[in-house]
Each structure stands twice: as C-alpha cells, then as structure tokens.
Length: 206
Length: 191
Image (tube, each protein chain N blue to C red):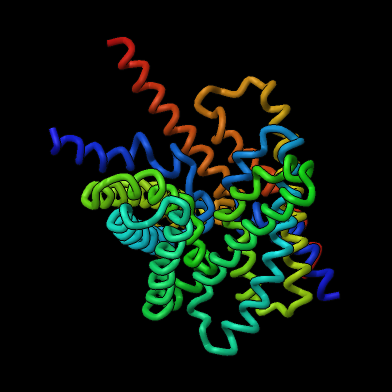
C-alpha cells in the first residue's frame, strides 16, 4: 500500500495535478523559454533543483518555523536556491543564461515552488515531499519539452539546433514569437482536457 | 525623448503581459469581469511604481556600492513583500473604501512575477532613477490595459458557444495570443 501511494504521489505531478496544464502555475516561464528545446531543458533543470531542495528544507524545518512567518521564511529559502542556480548557470553556461534573461531569477516568484512548499512540503514528511517535488518537476519539464519541441520544429525547422525539416517547409515564424507561445499553450491545455474528458467518459461507461 | 520611448515601449510594444509573459496568474485569474480587473490593474500599477523606487534605491545605494549584486534576488523579494504588507496596512487605516476596492488583491501581488520582473529588468537595463520610475508606471499601465481588454473579451466569451475542451484557461490563452498578435503591430512605432 505504502509503495503504491508513493508511486501515485509521483505520477500525480505528471498528469492529474500537472502544475502547468492542470493547476496553471508557472505559466510565465513556460511561455517565455519554450521557444527552443535547449532553453526548456535548462529551465526545467533549474526549476527541479530549486523545487527539490526548497521542498527538502521546508519539510525539515516545518515544525520549527512559527506559522505567522512561514511564508516569509519559505521565500527566503527559495530565493537562496534560486540565487545558487542563477550563479551556476551564469558561470558555466553564460550563453544559455543570457538567452533566458531575467527568467532564471524569476523562478523565485514561480508559483509552482511556493505553492508546493505551502500546500505539500510544509505538511508532509521529508521523503514524501521530495517525491512530490520530483513528480511536479517532471510534469513541468515534460510540458516545457512538448512546447519547446513543437515551437522549435515549426518555427525553426529544427530540434535542439539540428535541422529536421527540409527547405520545403516554410517556417512558421510566429511560433517563435510571443503569440505562438500563448496559442500553443492554449491548444495543449485543450488537448489535455480532451483526453481527460475521454478517460472520464470511459470510466463512467464501465 | 528617452523617457517617452520607455513609456511607449513598456505600455504597447514590450507589454509586460504580451511580451515578457509576466503576471499571467492574475491576468488569467482576475480577468473574468471588467470591474475587478480595473481594480487589479490599479493595484498592480500602484505597487509597481513603489517597487520601482524601492528597488532602485536598494540596488544603487546598497547592493552595487558594496559589490553585493548577487544578493539582488533575495533582497528584492524581501523588500517587495515588506512593501506590499506596509501598503496594505496603510490603506486599511487611511482609506477603508480603497481597501475594499483593491485590498484583497494586494497579498496576491507579492508573489506576482510582474513586480519582481520589473525590479530585475530595471536593474538589468541599467536605468537611472527617473527612467526606472517611468518604467514602473508605464509597465503598470500596460498591465492594466492588457487585463481590461482581456476582461472585456471574456465577458463576451461567456455568451459564446465554446467547444468543451477549450473552455476556461485554454480559450483565454488563445485569446491572449491573438491580442498579443495585434499588439505586435505596434512594434514599428519605435526603431
């Protein structure tokens, strides 16, 4: 039984509670950095790092921190890990860090992280909090990758910088621009809703 | 002239919602009716202007002179949180009707990326004091414009027959995409 709940704790982040398509959290970063797959990967890893470590610390100190100052202390913890991620990226991948602009520091106000700290890590044991954080990060990364994949392929004919489609394909430049991001995310959410509705209908028939 | 360029660019061309994708949570959350969306826009504009001033002071008087710019993220977020709290208490004491109108939005604004984004972008662009203030005010006006436009469209959208999977966030995002497409037409104003 315990095994199963841990598994469902992980998978709820990917599908039923997917932070982006279900909870609509962290949309800013998803829209902004998904114009190329590589940016999505970097952003996803940075968010995973911050989410896992801040969940860990929040869960460890959850009984020590008084209730009134918990949000403030969560924010400081998150800001610390975001600073680490930001500095590491700037030091080892300066180009990538430049391409993502202010969006790495902005992880600090990414609602996914504060949301998980408040809703889950501050109420659960360390192990479960980390599993939850990993599941949420996976859901986030998968959505980012899906967006990045479609936008880079249609907008630039390439995946991770390698040309995939030939010259015959006229690139849809709008996909690389902000409107493409909005419309693509809207369509992806609609697709997820459609699948969810179909699954529910099947369950009802049974 | 430079200030005018900053103003137009922050309101229309590099609109915080449509260009930087900042503040989407309130943008999608509070844009169902025109009334509340105006209050939200005002509250955001107000906090943005204050943040612009506060973050500039911290950045230029404390962080940069002592080479502490790696503390930007931590110090900005703390100052913003403290500032919003203060403003909330102040408004509640001084003007209860105003508090009724925009008080409930203030706590939401603290963890809003518009505010943090403004502080970081102003630091990144190396604006001087006056430019930062103009940037803050016009970013707020741009946000207000975006959210009121969206609310006006969504009020009509409630009456429309939208396909089921598209209802809610999906159609809102696609609408935002189309507005953003229209806003791209402004990009020719400034070279």
